[in-house]
Amino acid sequence: MESWVADIEFERTSLPGRLIKAILVDPLANYLPASLLRGLLRFGKSELAEANWNDPGGWRSMVISYDGRPKQLADKMLVGLGSVPKALRNRRKLASRLLARLIDSAGHEPAHVLCLGAGPGRIIIDAMSQAKRKARATLVDISSEAFDHGRRLAVENGVIEQVNYLQGDARDIDKLLEHRPDIVKMIGICEYLSDEEIVEIVGAVAGVMAPGGSIVFNSLSKAHGSDRFFRRVFGLHMNHRLPDQLKELLSSAGFGEFVAFPEPMGVYQVIVGRRQP
Image (cartoon, rainbow, N blue to C red; front, side, top):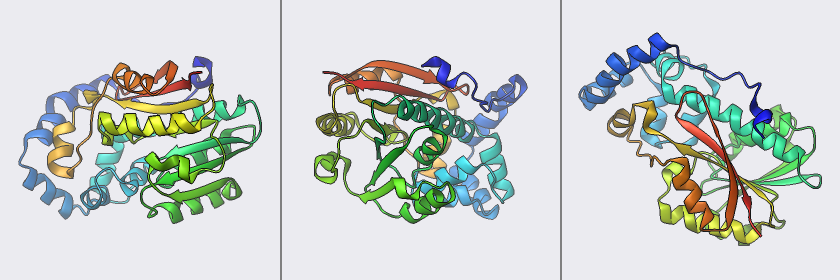
């Protein structure tokens, strides 16, 4: 599976850039008064900050980070230079490539991909556009707010007939699905869930999957160095877990054969597991 991602062109930060961030940028961002930093972001009309204040870690802030082409100067600095936005774009490339290859290696066509906490579905739309074989995707989210944006993306990428957006709770997935998924995508949601919530969700997922099906999820490391800034300024509280901690949680629900793929910023690892017999 390592060969699947060998040619991805990831974003990286140079050694001088990492030193400046560690010595100057992170201490200022993490320890200057939060009210001052929020005021500067409001003055700079930061759309990324506004999106997080309205919905911390929500789909709008993800779209801004994924696109990487903000209009405001404040956002150009946050999105262009920040470790997490770079790592998010790396995660997008890594996850979409892995999903595309899993679709291509599925035992039948079209493969069925279940996306949990899907938002607009940027990653699975990327994956279906890259895959050589057909897939259909069921995108489930507790809120339907991002669905219209997702449908526009699907139209632009020529996969609108292959996607189905459903509003609902992932823990009730057995009541929402008509067909068993071959692949389950849980990218970008574990960091907002407790251990108990993860176990409950993957337990429900395991109940609708056939043995041998794949699950794709990610870990989050504090290596980005900005957790204090995110909590104080953005109101963004994320749960940082090592890959082995997440593997243990998923193992309890019947998953195994895990393979982890780190992105070069050291913030995320995308992990593929299998539903065990």
